Length: 140
Image 1 (tube, rainbow, N blue to C red):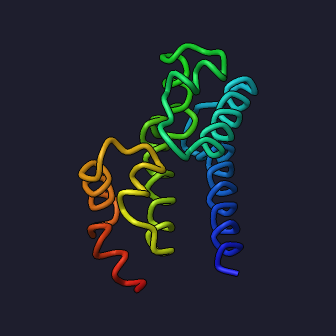
Image 2 (cartoon, rainbow, N blue to C red; image 1 turned 180 degrees about the horizontal axis):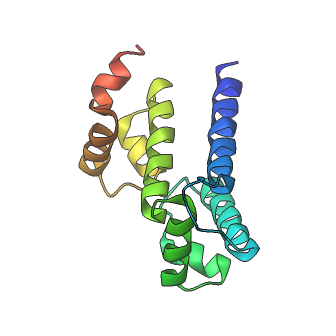
């Protein structure tokens, strides 16, 4: 039952991300071409389904058939964040859920392609204000 709940939460995150992309702030003059929106939608799909492991920007750009610089500019223009920020936030959210399930920190770092444990710990603490170990203790 908990697994289904996690999948539903992942689905809500995914839906939220797509809604943010299509949301136009009234005070912005930016309008996005259908090609830009299509690129970002396809790239987010690719990121979401390949988040496990080391996901490289070059892999995304190759799959989307665009240059790295064009992709970064377009992604930031539409989502208001860089692809790196987006990927890191998604990895940290999934890592948080894995911690709640009791997975070992080393396993989580490997699963989501963090360079090492210290990289995961530093990023997690920066995002959530608590170390992964302290966070996980709340669920034991």
